[in-house]
Each structure stands twice: as C-alpha cells, then as structure tokens.
Length: 337
Image (tube, rainbow, N blue to C red; front, side, top):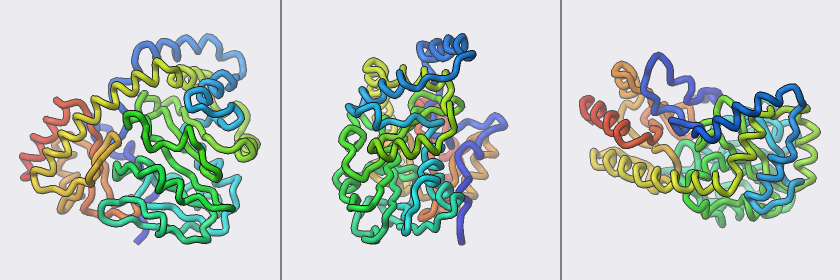
C-alpha cells in the first residue's frame, strides 16, 4: 500500500496541542534576526536583490557565488530539480522526507524506492548502478541518522546526479559529514534555514551545485521567487556570528536529545540509534493508537506510517527543551510507556 507523500508534521498540530510533531526550533527567530526582518519591510517597494545573500551563502560554505541558488525553502528546490532534470531512472532512498519524491512524481517522473532497513544506515551498494538521479537525506528526516560523507559521496557516478537534502545539517555540531563545502562532482546539496532559525513561514533555503546546473535551475525559477525579508534572513543567518550561535545551540540540543533517547530506550522502546538531528524516530506498538491518546491529552507527535519504509508502529518526536520533554515523558508514562 502506498503512503500519503504530502502529509507533513504541520498537519498534526493545532487546537492548542503541544507541538512535538514539527521539527522547527521553538522560540525563534531570535530578536536580533526578527528586527532585521522587520526592518526589511521598508524596502518592499523595490524588487528583491539576491546577490548579497548569495554572496553570504557562498562565503559561509567556501563556494563561488555562481554555485548558489536561493530558493523559497528547500521545497522549492526539489520542485525546480524535478522540472529541470530528465532522469531515466530516479531513485529516492527511504525513509526520508517525502517531498523530493512527491515533486518528482508531480513532474511526471517515475520513481523507484531504495528502502533502508533496521538502523537505516546508508549502503551505497543498494542503489542500482544505472540510476542517474539519487536523492538522499543527511541527516535524514525522519530517522535522525547521519550518514558518513564518504558513503554519500560514494553514490556519485559519471552521468548521475546525487541530491543530498542537508536541511538538518546545521543541527549537527561542526557539520562533519556535510558535503556543502566540498561539493564533489555530480553532488547537489540543498539546505534550509527553517529548522534552526524558526523561519518556516518565511521560506528560506538554497541549492549548492555546479554553475551549469545552477544556471538551468535559475531559468526554471520564477523571477524574484525569494522575497526581500527572506533574503535578509539568509544573509544574516550565513554570517560567522550566526553560524557560531547555531553551533552553540546544536551542542545544547545534542545533550538533551541524547538524554531523551536514553529515557525512551530505558522504557523498552526501540529508538533509532545514534540520532544526530533535532528529533527521534522510535518504534512503539500501536503507534497510531498512542498518537491518538497523546492528542487527547494535548500532545502532537508525528505519525510514521506516511514515510515509505516505516509503518504503523513508528513515531517521530521533536526534541524540545527539558521541561517540555519531561512533561511528554510523564504523559507517556501515564499511558504505560
């Protein structure tokens, strides 16, 4: 049975529910960033100028400006790639964020799935040799698995495009497995500012790729697709000071994530090991039933059965601050978990 590729965490929230379903950092954006975004409204009469933000992203990753395309979030990047590329054999490595596959199918492409098993670690040998488009997440949503960069880079072949969704890479201290600053031949990296900086409503992301592909994507993108406030946010969040701030938060997040994972594991649950993103993926008997009971008690978590490769006994839980996580653990305890 197929799954609803268009179901995302935002469909789980609302009605006053405590949000453990959406992987966007709460309490964001910080005031210094919010003030810059508010100030940008004074310039809305002028058409957006993407160059300063492109230059800031290029500097942040040690790339050239012509290797950067700014997009209205990572979601637009997937749509543009689906429109520009003409793969003969497209493969999406699952479980992962479903929007890349949805975008490919919407553009009329057939898509094959490579399903990773158990601990959901990447084995490049599982990908068909003649696949000319491969999509993989790193760290992967919903599993929180961080693949070694060598394993991801090993997917590259002459004539193959490898799209790496690094939307959650900035929650990994030091970003040791990122390919953004290396960008091997044939590798396309997609990044998002949504998660760490709380900018889901602003839509801010970018593509890093070779200049030729960036040029083709630019031709397919509507003019002025990224608004002035989003451009201001991209430039600001790419500064050394902002990167250092994000790094400090990522370290704090890792401590709390590991503590929460240990608590859940101690209760006999299977939590996908070595989680490195801002969420945990866990197997729970009758997960859909547990999800419903949590909703009755005011808590929203992300169902796992809409991710290919998972099923009705999986949930994804966003990592929040310690008091919020403790309250969720208490409620789970009341449910016998």
